[in-house]
Length: 151
Image 1 (cartoon, rainbow, N blue to C red):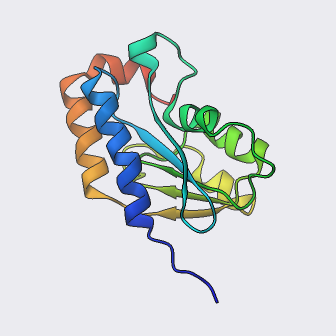
Image 2 (spheres, rainbow, N blue to C red):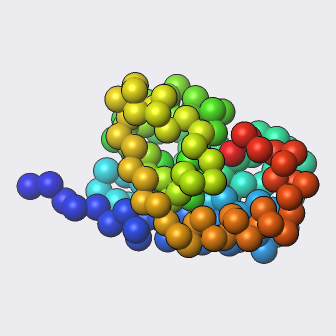
């Protein structure tokens, strides 16, 4: 019997992280990692602005917080924005089988590349994710333009 996963509920965790990042003065992108049954393993958010570290994307923050896993194949990466090439490489390198994307209108990233490699890509086309990041970009175009393609 296959359990139907609550992708919207999983995305809510990542959205909470995005809001936390925004409250810290950063770019509102969040991510979370779940097990195959939908249990939360870890969550994180983009901290590049807050920490001045270009490697702390939301996906990498969640990944680091998850600690070492025996296997990543059955894990689900959930992110509010399509993963950039850096984060897409992380998904590929560690063999995540599924990525749930909040939205890809603002940025396409490596969606098609990951799909071509057999990663299940689920794009929820969330208006909430798009409006949260869209408002940030409108208010901080210089920061977004410096970082475009980074997340």
